[in-house]
Image (tube, rainbow, N blue to C red; front, side, top):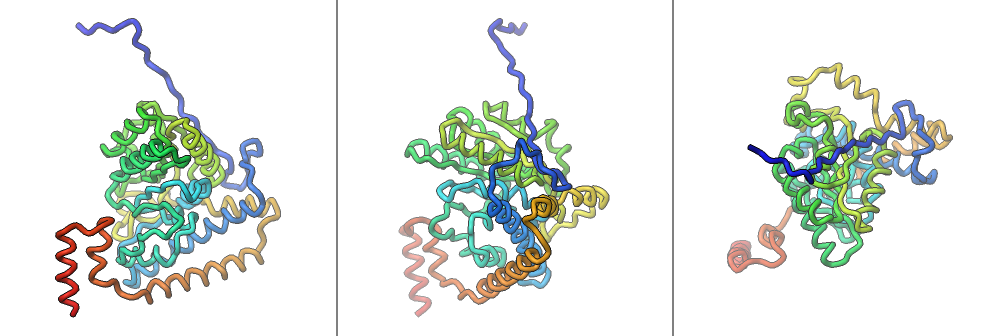
Length: 360
């Protein structure tokens, strides 16, 4: 017989959903974040640059100039909107599909092209940014972000750690372990999930019975919210609030960005084998870039001349980045040893010495 103690309490919860900008470019003025004209245009330019980079990367892959590449088409607002709220002192833990986050934070385009071309030096983060190497293995970086948040707490740093991942990661043990620790210790970490509806060929409905992904946060005593991931203003607002809460000692937040992966999982995938073209076309009507353009046009911020100039500037920027990436000198053999740990281990030092002798 199981005895239920009278003091047992089952908490109830409800998942909040934030929508600000609809597909027609009409905003809820009461929720619209306080962004200047320049900030709004900057968001649009970052969305446009992220999409243009993505398109060029896909073309380069088809030409055999870079390797397997994961497109971000359709997910730009979830990435740009969230990263726009970050400070450069915050610690960012990306998965493999966060090109828009890198671009928004000012990560050099050249380095991104180099990484996807197989040059690991593309992940040597420039000074002034706290962006960790991408995590291709799904979800394994979530505990790392939690660890960084705990270190920030011990050091007294007024920063937040941010982990980006897809909906598939919420089915991994790393997700639950990281959330449990973050909740228990009320750590300054923000979890941002891009729920693009598909974990490779597995639909969201087949990997979890939860009505939303955001509600998983409540089991760990964490704040959870779902936002329209194609609404750059909603993503920005939710992320800014979560970051302020984290830096101010209010604990972690889990943001589910409800979006869609328009393209294939990667260039090694054929999404036509497991999803319908009608589903894709339906989501194209919710294009994050087009809805922001419509908003800017209604405000008088956007016109065809501005667009033509933006396209020219963006094309020149990407062309130069590709040239710089493809003209980079080949890595030296010693880099195999020098960039694994902060200091070479005794074995690495011996191997490095042997390598140097071989070069002679």
